[in-house]
Each structure stands twice: as structure tokens, then as C-alpha cells.
Length: 356
Image: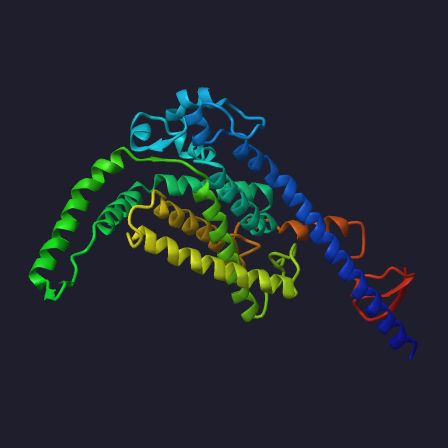
């Protein structure tokens, strides 16, 4: 009887402590995330926009890395283009991320960064967050073939199709086919000329990479849950986040947002909206790069390779931020307890009542 009463009391105490610990841990991780993403956010905001460069002055007074007039003289060192890469300015693969058209452009990218970066930070920490962002941006930048194909499709899509009829008269199918052939030929010959003069800038490729990682992480965690959890001995991914209704809602929103995004970007890249002036192929490339990183991070754990890597060596996957915080906090003791206890006695792994 005493054993059962103590067990029930300890279990209730443990549940309360776990709830408090989970809330505190989540709050600490969110604060860590805010501090980690702040330098990148500040860097994006500290560059004059193209509209400010055109007017030669700041439209919103703030500390900037370079003045609008000086940036206007050095734009070739920042913008990504076929010419810049041919001339050896390889750093434009990264520097184009810092430039934006106007405040709406930079604001949307900063918002996307803040909303989509937490998943990568929770799994891989600041290094993983920045690594996914910049590697996805570079992947989007080097996809010149994708931009050329998008441009051709958009030019063709911007040329109106032949109508099925003109008033009461039906347009012959042969005439419509001839017009469609003209549209295709004109786009095919015009696209390379425009592509050669195309300049790209903006952080959208990196932000889309973080979105792709979030989707991949959500899907693979769901797969893990359906398979009954992580392999033995492996830390659960994403313990930094709540696992109740909030996480479920967040996962559903991520799926809905990603699905809508992919459909819209694919349609635009295929020319359904005509010439948009947006690098939709770069968005899709960055998204795919982030999703690929999620596969690399999560699949080994799902396949039971988390403690040995791909080759059976000593390398180990990094623990999530929240898991590392708990591990460090519990390093001073408590190993082997069946649950934590704030009282003088606890029940050990063998079910024995032991004094603290």
C-alpha cells in the first residue's frame, strides 16, 4: 500500500515537473533561436534596397553596411548574372542574397526566414540553420538551366493563344497550330538573349530551402511516428518543440503552406502566369535542396544508422537543441531513475523505494 501511494505521488509530481520542464525548455529554445537568427536578419535589413539605390538615399533611416550611392557603383559585385560568373565573380553566388528590390521584398523574406527557420534550428542548431539557408541559396543560384527553361516557358505563356473562334467564325485548327508553333519558336529564340542579360538577387532561395527542410522534417517525423518511434538508443528529433496539439497544428500548417507554395511556383515556372520577374525555378531549387538536407538528417535515424553514420564509423548525428539542453541539465545526476523526483525518495529502475 505504501509503495502504491508513493508511486502515485511520485508520478503526479513527475508529470507536473515534466510539464514545467517542457515549457521552460521550449521557451529557452525559442530565445536561443531569436538570438541565433538575429545576425542574419540584421544583415538583410542593413543593405539598401534597389529602390533606395535608384533614388540615391535611404527611404528608411537605419544603420547600413554600405550607402545607396556607393552600392549603386558596385552592384556588379553583388548581383548574380551569367556575366558575373563568367568573369570570375563567384562570390555573387552568395552576395546576391543581400540585395532586395524594396521593403516589401526584404520584409517577406525576413518573415519567411523567421517562420521557417525554427525547424532547422531545433534539429541542427545555428550552424545547421545558416548552412541550410546559404547552401540552398547557392543551389538556387547555380541552377542556370532552370532559369533559362522558366524564361522560355514564361515568354511563350505571355504570347496570347489563338482564339477558338472570331465572332461566329471558327478558327481552323491548322491556323491555331501554326500560331502555337510561332509562339514556341519565338520563345525559344528570344529566351537565350534575355537570359544572358538577366540579373538575380534576393534571399528567397535560402528561405525556400528552410521551408523545404521544414516540410521534409514534418513528413519524416510523421513517418517515424507511424513506424513506432525512433530506433533504440537514438535521441528523438525535435524534442525542442511541444508534441501536443500545437505541434500538430504547426505540422498541418507547414504541409498546407508548402503544398500551396509548390503548386503556385510550379505553375508560374511553367509559364501559366506569363512573365513575372521572379525566379520561380530558384525557389523550387532551394526548396528541393532543403528537403534533401532533411532526408540526409532524418533518414539515417529512421533506418537505425543514427549512432554510426553511413559507414559504421564513430561519427554521430548531433542531438536537437532541446535534447542537448536537457542532457546538459541532467548531467549532474538522476541517471537510472524511472522518473524525476523533487522529494527525498524516488523509485529506481528496479522499482525499489530509495532515499535521495
